[in-house]
Length: 342
Image (cartoon, rainbow, N blue to C red; front, side, top):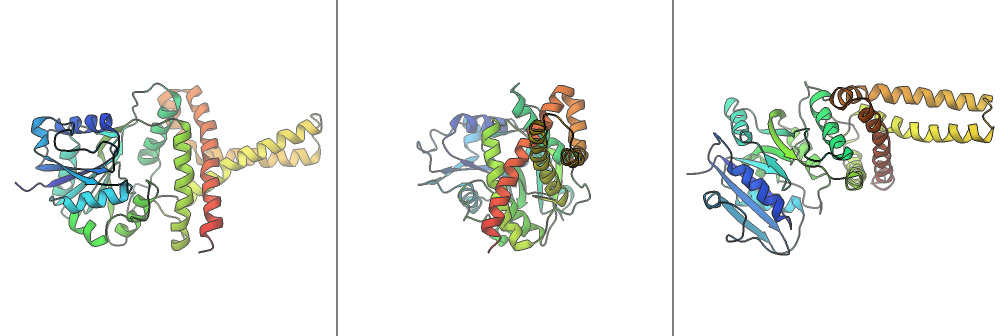
């Protein structure tokens, strides 16, 4: 039987994560006919039909596409789609886990409305880790998708952690931009091309689990994503509801401003031995105004975190957000210097 869904999974040197993901797919309930295409992106120990970590029953649904050298997720996903036989392709990152109803809900969205061409799901806010930062990041993303997005928006980010699209449309658009060697902004770039003709709907019932990393790996990703996004911005010359809205840009600027102006004000106070001279008062007033602006811009997230985790977690989230905004600003600033000339 021809599959209705083709699940595309890029893989590289993470057998435990792949095993967990495939095991959760194997527990799918009420799923339509589906196949799994795992693209081995140049792993040190290549996947084969004999060592792929799946049950015997699931192995019948699973095919391996092997790349001799590491090409990056854009190439891997395109190769996976080229081998797919389903009417719709479902993209999953190799480090997520699906719910028993994930594939069913994807098929239901497409089946209920034949006009739907592409959808994106969401990763739930719960984390196995008790550490602060993974929980902060999970709540930050959840709030962004659920609480802060414009629900009347025409299109949403085609996030490859969990997203699906009609195969003929993906093929017609030419797939992911393969010039990106790492997971950078290839999903944003494809989103823009899809949205020229089609809506990408947000389906919150389509869920996956994802365990987030620590601070520095995420901060690095923020920096690189902001850097490469500016090249896309240089072409389009406008903000968008996908990567950076005008409000998000203002939030980043105000966050950096809070840290910079706060530091300058503190240094000025120390240099005047605590005397509130006129320059110090002016600087302090600007700092307070910027702080209030930033609190207002982040208020939905802060209130959400307060209700989820309490005051202490909320205050830590506020400070952590300020630092992350500096990484975003640095990436965007460097990108504008370099890409703004093109």
